[in-house]
Length: 178
Image (cartoon, rainbow, N blue to C red; front, side, top):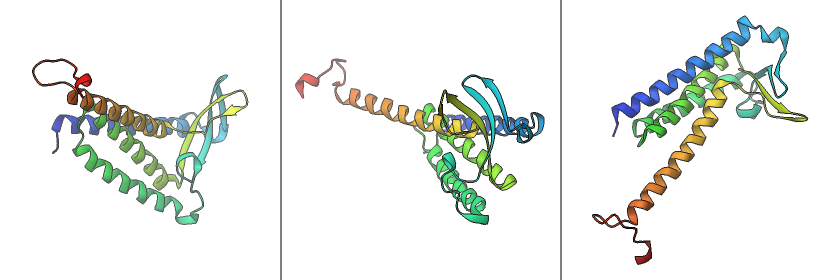
């Protein structure tokens, strides 16, 4: 059953992530002109590095040929539809916001695939010789959304266990009785 307030939270999160993602990519491409700069060092551990990602997360599955960006965009949109159904059944505000963040990030990357044939990645974190994959705001929202869903699952499981170990009316923990 759809809970209107939670649904609005999810839609708002999706729209905020999508707006931040597309605005950051516009700035990187058209204001900063990172494709010509190629790389800009911001901090000893953070660069802006231009990468056109033709695969999925971390460049995986980039061997689909000329139709790859279309295939990956269609798959991502199917996932967004499934996320919409899940959002309509969200049981907490954290779950709703997380699903919205994941969906907003997915849509942001789909827009890139359809517009450019690849996803615009530009955030490059590194420490000495260690370097993480180059990513974007949408990717960060997807990863944070998944992490928040895991947290929500743990919190819900803990609350369910707490409810099972307390007898109604006395407020005492009856784990010893079990």
